Image (cartoon, rainbow, N blue to C red; front, top):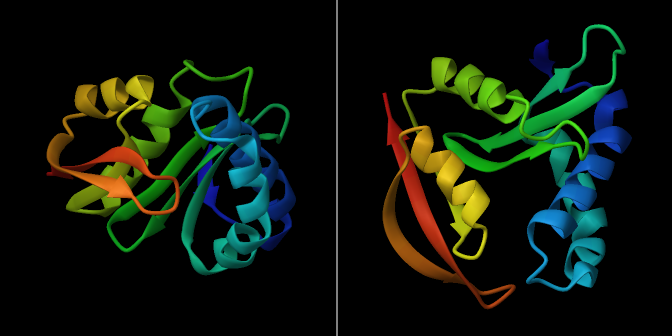
Length: 142
């Protein structure tokens, strides 16, 4: 089930956020994510966030965060990745938004393949000033 973020979801989604970032971005020191944890936790309630909650266990297995039509990230809990949760979250916001954009690290080939499969196109290349890593700016239009 996909639903809007609730305040009491914050601790669980932040746990998913930090664990997933460390796992998916092993080319960035994990301290970077740990050091940004508190800032992201403060910003999360102001973002447009949708969570995927398992209907049987009521456990949050993933979430997508948006700022207008920009996808700040799709995060799926370890252990339930590659089971269609990220696609369901993305499909959900594709029904709400006529266009979407995002940035993805060039070294995160798994995510790039996922977004390309979902009809996102690379628009430009940039360098993330915070990590000094190359990234692609990708977009999708209905």
